[in-house]
Length: 560
Image 1 (tube, helix red, strand yellow):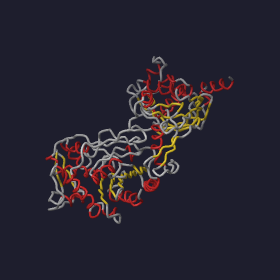
Image 2: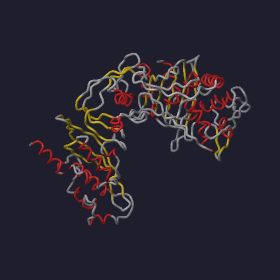
Image 3: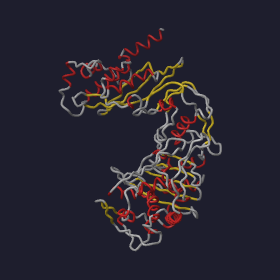
Image 4: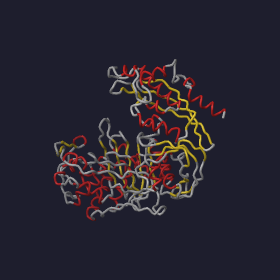
């Protein structure tokens, strides 16, 4: 009982907040509260009414400090209502701060404010997580931003990351029985760990969330971030959304017993992929088998977000694989027939051009494709319906239908129906088209075999799930020509430099995608070698052949 009373006193006495710069300095926290927040019932104090007369404009340093101090002091005391009154979203803040103690079982909270940088204030959280007789310390850093409301009052801009930097909208902190851990194995039985393969962090979290109980493990107790409405879905027995990030463990109170799960990954391919992205900034790559759809590797330079499987980026000229297949099927192009590739082409009020304004006079579709000529595709826009590219992507390449079931969170790509200039832009992988390396690796796999095989990282035999299928195969003549176009591009076109020495059974395509606000475009590259296919993006890497090409070549050279 004595220990409980001491803890209670530490929560109610703001003077106990420690650190170099404490939350309450010379009573500033109390002054800030009386001046800016009003009481919990929402009534205005005289000082509050005065605050509303402040001129609009950036918050001042004294306002930032007072608002931050008042918010942090109330949070530390456990008064969610008062803390929420310092924010611009009181209901959301109150719910999150109440759940912090009720659902996450976080108590004995000490908040130490750091120095402010403009409107931003960093702070250190030191607390204790207590659950069913077990307690563990919890320490982490977070930050808040003070903004001026429309009525002139300075307030904390509420966002879930204020409570914990890993929280996003809809997420909650929960302490309790978690999903059983999983001992993930590669296709040959080698264990896959984040210590050895850091890019697999979100993948392993996702495997645990989806297969922990199926793999025969025993649950432990953890503090974790529960994503979105996954808790409700679990209660209802519904499947998790394939593109929803997995729950994340923040603190283990008691360890569970892991079950064992075999994946399609290759430890050899994953190690090479990890090494290659580690030598580059903002790079992501996927390796798969065209004959089966099995994913052999997925790696990212940054380990916080799985761009390789969940990214949503314009794919640039790698999309020309899909567009070319459509033109070939519609007899709007033929591999060795003449095809226009002027310096410029206009459609829908926009003027399109080729890189460095090159042109090919009296050239064929083979030469235009190999040189990645934009205008060779834009000149055909007027002969197409607005939904033709969308249909081709969905019906033949299995993209954009939200029905892939890879075994972990993934994005299926998007090729929306567009019109005018945006439709023309989509033909060359801009406009509203969005892909990630997994999608692009699947595109070139379909081009190689003529059949879409949905990529997957866990065999459907594990949980009897159904894999997505395409509505139809690529027309045989178009597939033969597309295969030849990609082979020619890898041996004699824009992909030849990166693919040198990898023959004879190779094909490839370069790409670059312009992004507003970026000095350099995102560089893309995709290729196959035998029964291996890979795709990579290097964000802000420039031309794909130079930036992403060597990465793809390296993982293909290493094999699976």
